[in-house]
Length: 327
Image 1 (cartoon, rainbow, N blue to C red):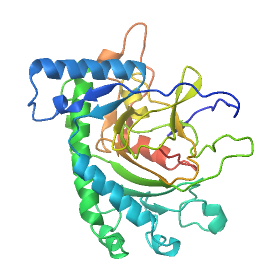
Image 2 (cartoon, one colour; image 1 turned 90 degrees about the vertical axis):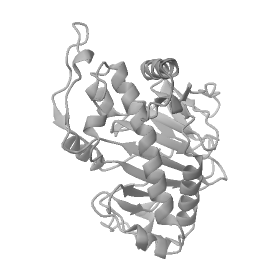
Image 3 (cartoon, rainbow, N blue to C red; image 1 turned 135 degrees about the vertical axis):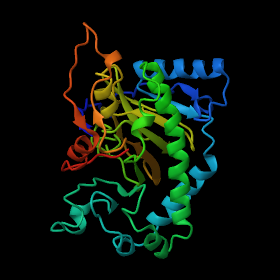
């Protein structure tokens, strides 16, 4: 994730009006092409418009409400476990559990690869066996495995439809899907414990302002305020009801499109007195994929800006940065 310069807003300065993201019916983008041509074309046009303005949109009609409810239930159950129990899920090869405020618990610990977790705790889970989910379930999380795998499958199907819509807007239908044979996706359960406001009355900033590093992110939220995007030089709260799924663009997509589509700078601020949960699903292609500029994105006014790089190399360089922000 790329870190972003953060404008300062004093506690006395009123925040901008919340951003209500564009709502797009992604059922019209399903891979089975069940939507009529007109409905599908309209949805694709909406995706293109959202990507060139806000860089994010709300996915309606995703059809994964049941899987999403189960995923949030699994996350709450896991994070409610005692700290010493959660610590039995190690951080191995960029996956696993990271507690909040690592430095306060064990300043000498190297178990978390030097990760600085600020005020959030999280667990990263891949599509394969990077984390022993059966072992997590045995810690006292009944149904954890089925909830995780069902949500990953459903979210990936939703992402496939969005990626194909993006490919259509870029005049390369099938482009992204042909690079998703062995996707390198990451599911993250995030928990922000309740926090007090700062002495000046402002809410603490939980995450370093950043952009996501992958292709797209499907961000499921619990309805509590906290997410802010950088818009017109100001941090703007994002309005999204519980169970909403936000689609955000990442740095890899920006690179593919020569910055025709830009990743969305965002951060998370504290929610006083309330536990906050979110579930980002980072969608990335096969690590062997070469990320090079899509031809339709190169023009005389926008010459090619990036050298080709494999998706695996690009992601590793971002994931292994000393501080990884959250959503």
